[in-house]
Amino acid sequence: MLPKSIRLLALAIVTLLLALSTQLPARGAEVIRLTNGEWPPYQSPELPHYGAASWLAQRAFEIEGYQVEYSFFPWNRAYYMAQTGQYDGSLIWSYSEERAKHFIYSDPFLYTNTVFFFNREKPIDWDRWEDLQGLIIGATSGYHYGTAFDEAERKGIFTVDRVSSDELNLKKLIAGRIDAFPLSLDVGRYMLRTQFNDIERGRLDWHPKPLRKTAYHLIISRKSPRAQELVDAFNRGVAKLKASGEYERIMQSVLESIRPR
Image (tube, helix red, strand yellow):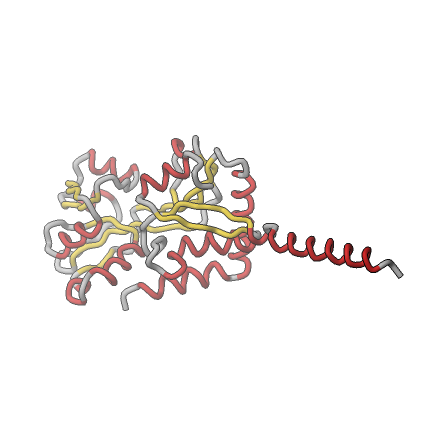
């Protein structure tokens, strides 16, 4: 049998190693810091799991052994904080060549349809841009509705009335001051559910034909030394979410909870 002093020394070493092991970051605790913004029902600090897109991203990374920490900022600030490497990345963003200079894009993991909302007293029906001849279309300053929309405006097919917010455009549509307003379908539904009363909601409807379908991505700063690693892990995680059916369950649980009844 070993001398008591040696046994005590061995026990002390084992105890120390166990204590240190509990303090070392396990693979499952590896942290990724992402900026986020306000775009419900996809993103908001006020929503369960921070909205559908935030929840999907969190679960995709969790499956691959990462813990996501979100910080919410105005959009310009969210972009800047990620671009300068103060955060690992940001969500969610559509693709642009300019952004691709500073970020690595994930595969698209969320799609939205932009449709025309209209007043039920002045319904619209359209298949070609020329069908909107003479209408006054509301738009939100700083938003891009696609090159086809821009070309139709340039040709004078319709007149665009720009204001500062989506909410103001919906109010103008309810009042009959514009003929239609392009907006992401689920964003519009969320706003009608949470910011307008039953009478106001009842005055509006939307046309099923999308004027634009947009793909959204996670973006990781090229300044991050693990940029490609994080993008690859995220893509794998999303694929696993879809294969297991969890992706669809998350989307349905979030979106159904905020759609108008």
